[in-house]
Amino acid sequence: MFAPIPETLDIDLLVLPDTNLILVASVIEPLRVVNRIVGRDLYRWRIFSPDGQAIETKSRIPVPVDGAFRPEKETAPLFVLSSHNWRRNATPALKMALSKTARHRSMVAGIESGTWLLAETSLLDSVRATTHWEDFDDFASAYPQIDMVRERFVIDGKRITTGGSLPTVDLMLEIVRRRQGYSLALEVSRQFIYEQADRRQETSAMPSTGSMRVMDQRVAQAVKLMEEHIDEPLLLARLARRIGLSARHLQALFQESIGVPPHVHYLALRLNAARRKVIESRLPFADIALATGFNSASAFARSYKAHFRESASETRRRLQG
Image (tube, rainbow, N blue to C red; front, side):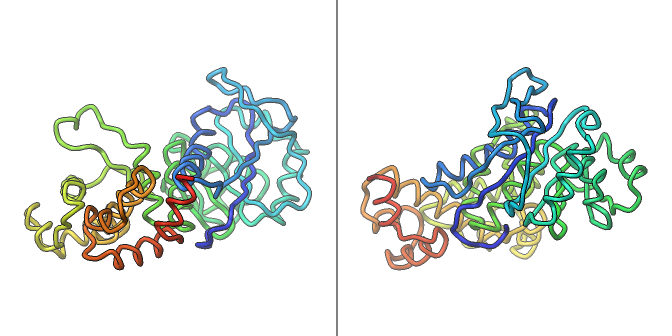
């Protein structure tokens, strides 16, 4: 599932009644954005309910489904989504179906209260896992055989668990990062940027790839400077000096805050800017290279293909028709 390959990944979603609409969107929307950005379906999904009926969400907006959950020997990753009243739907038949299908699935994920259903089916025994913070202590007491950790999401072998809607977005960004690379994951995450009310006079809260935690303010300043200097990239030492830090300290802050060193984030910003110009304009590639801080068209071409697994001309031909 996490292999860095360009093939389409099919995912099955089992959504239980009373699931929050935002939880369903937290799984699907990042994948939809990936498909829109790259111009082809890198991700496809099917949605199932226990009885084949549309899911009545707590917001009273129904979610259409592809059918009832009747798995045979499917190998696609399975995401089990639940928010409220999970026990009402944890029938012996459903638990048996989950137990059987887990033998064949490449991955099984418990999304928010879906973690409880996996635990009830003994699919998390001796596995590191997490769940929603409100339920954490009760869950840990109910299932002492599970190694509970207070994380936003946990990937342990063939099991995934998440602690809520935004942590699920984090998880999906991490999946994209591992499969398609940091540049695309960053571009997807930027579609979900928001500003916190008490920080609007400072700088935008930037969601990081694989973690939606608010950045260290110094990292946020560095990212802002990077975005303002796409065409003439700042050297790390100069960037750090502008913020009042040493280069080594800034390196450490980046690694701690968003999980990559500054040069990786900076290159991703520049390549994403270049890709938008490739798609949205007919500028010569040499001009695009210059506008995004590459010292030659050949250096730009090599970096572009290494990150996006196709040349700039292939991208333009495919998406501009």
